[in-house]
Amino acid sequence: MDYYHILGVNKNASDSEIRKAYKKKSMQHHPDRGGNEEEFKKVNEAYSTLKDPQKRQDYDNPRQFNFNTNNMNASGFGFEDLFAQAFGFGPQGRPARHQGNLHINLGVKVTLEDVMIGKTLTAAYTLASGRNETVDITIPIGIMDGQKIRYQGLGDDTHREYPRGDLHVTVRVLPHKKWKRKNFDLFSTISTNIFDFVVGGVYNVETIDGKNIALKIPKGTKPGTTFSINGYGVPNIQNGRRGSLYITVDANVPNIQDEKILNTIKEIRNETTV
Image (cartoon, rainbow, N blue to C red; front, side, top):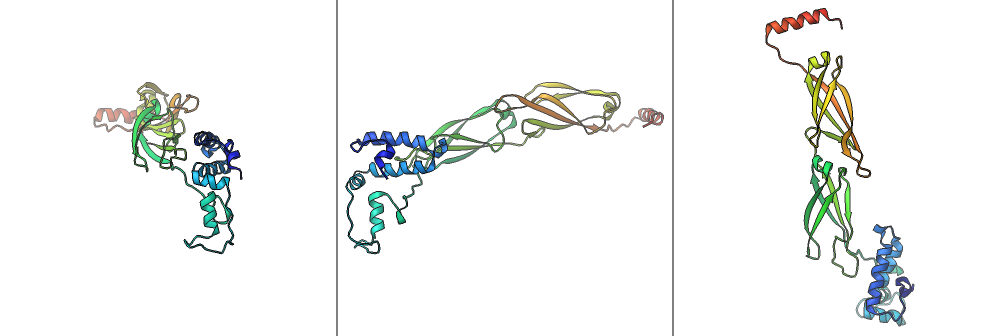
């Protein structure tokens, strides 16, 4: 494997040129950016050797070992161990794996009202290297519960020879006391006077973002009927179009104590054919 060819530099390249080439190639082949994982491993392997003066010298001038793989030297290392030290390979010739810099996972909680208009939060966290990091997290309008936001290069930075890890933010949308969400639609149940079902009525629906809608209940409507109102749901995170409201109307039976009113209702009931 030609490490110089992998990084795209010549054998006389300076440490600075090798470092710049590594950054370019690692970004090009990073799996999180759609690159090839095997190529990414090769780039890291090449840089791990060429960035170290001693390893680079050993790579440019391979040493000859005159004992077989079963022999051990005085330090307790066999041929494979020496080979790994010189060339960055592990047992049986496999490339030595390095975990690189880890990703940071954070969770944030927002309300359904926040989802309607978007929100910016400030998060502070400590890296494994001990460095404190502060970042502004922008919650997009319409984001779904459990959706993740990735911020490239804001993760761990312990291993300076590798690119920084990423910050992964999981967004949790808190349950709402009035509205239930399904995709970009909102569902709610209201109770209105039972006589509204008989003679018709109007119910004022306050949307989650503070608008008022007059919901007309036609006479003869049956309790449990669901009405839909287009364009007042959650904005679609991709195109901004809002979903619908689905309002289920239940009957609220009044507790009437006035005997005169009760008698009038009884007369109406007796004269009404269902």
